[in-house]
Image (tube, rainbow, N blue to C red):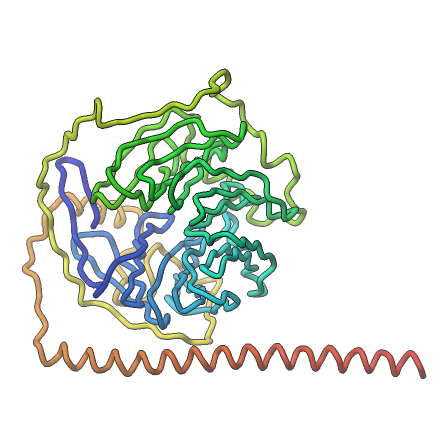
Length: 436
């Protein structure tokens, strides 16, 4: 569901998935919305009143998370089929899979510069992947619990994990060291989010609370009690002035912070400044970086907004159902096609089903304005016979997708063996040359 509060509260419900939706994320430009579902598909929506969507169907099990790279060129999806898949957003094509986890993959996130991917799994490991050579370059193991969620800090030097063992851990990926370990919740930690400054981390837990950690001083500073049940997700806004949380009580709460005031554009520019650096980051890049505004406060502040916050929105805002039948099915392919240098790339896909008539800022502005209008066109329907035929085709495509996935794994193993053979042959050749 997509909510609009101006000029009046209303919601747009996008209908297309056939099972629980597990993850949603806007693209960096905000002109696309990715969603993952237990129906094994990933959908990409144009967030306007027409709600056109495109469907990716390459995973063989429920998809747990979606994540755009910071430049919007790639999408990473994590699934219970133990794999992470990366997609090209310009061509809307599958690029490659990452296989090393031995259990369900719960989350996969790009680093701010797009060169790394971090993933967590129920096999009790957190893995770091290099997007250039598609290899696992680092591995963090935990023998107590597994991570529900994992993410990079804003400058990409550290990762934080939300553990099922009630803990939050922060690792420095440059020296492979556990920097900080927090055990402030009485239930599993389901989600975390870094403040854009990198100085604070907010956590959401099944114990019904949100907690804000001061990473400069290494301590808990705020406990937020607004939900009446487990809290499943939390995220800061781009500038860090707001954050939002959602939980099992069917509520989405919006909070205002009193942290460092940041300009959103400056934050994004700073986080992307290392996009093409050659030397590794300096050790002083992580802590401390900016003056700490919480000096002198050593106690934890507990906040319960139900005491003084009134819901100013209408209890039953109008909800508009938007059905999308302009979807296309994409299966796995090994073709890796990138845009030519002279090819003009806009925010939308080159796929005709998701291509607008014009790719310009004015077009994007018009589409944003359309959100304030209710759709006037009547909803379309599909004959039952066509629906049955499509369902049969989808079943056949599922079989083909699984076959391609198996073949891909076998090809990967064959390539690894061939590489080892070539290396051994080279060693023998060098030894013979030295003897002669």
